[in-house]
Image 1 (cartoon, rainbow, N blue to C red):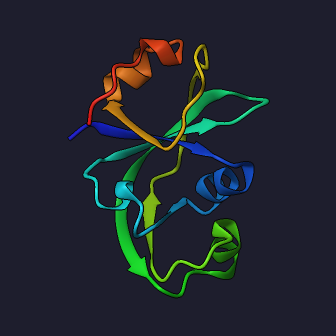
Image 2 (image 1 turned 30 degrees about the vertical axis):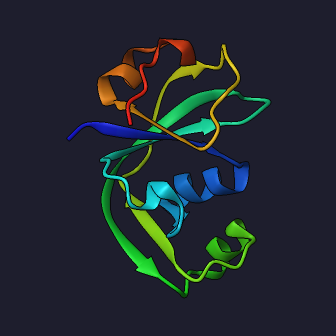
Length: 125
């Protein structure tokens, strides 16, 4: 499967994604139960672009995340799904030419790789 979940990441979350190769998702978020194989990182302003993509190796559900991840979430969630990814790959920037990315959006790997701007990506459920 080549389905990609495109998510907006704060810098702290992006740093964890890049350095620790983990993307934390509160278990109650809809994307925690969605089926996808890749995560694409949309970085908020001032970058405002999708800059990295990573294949998901495995995942775990935990109620005791590492302290650094717990601080990222900043809310009291009973369980987190930790998506362990391969080393995130820097891709050609997919620039924001709309209103950015909010929540999670889904598309195909080829769509994300071929796009120059957010408006060129067809979103799927």
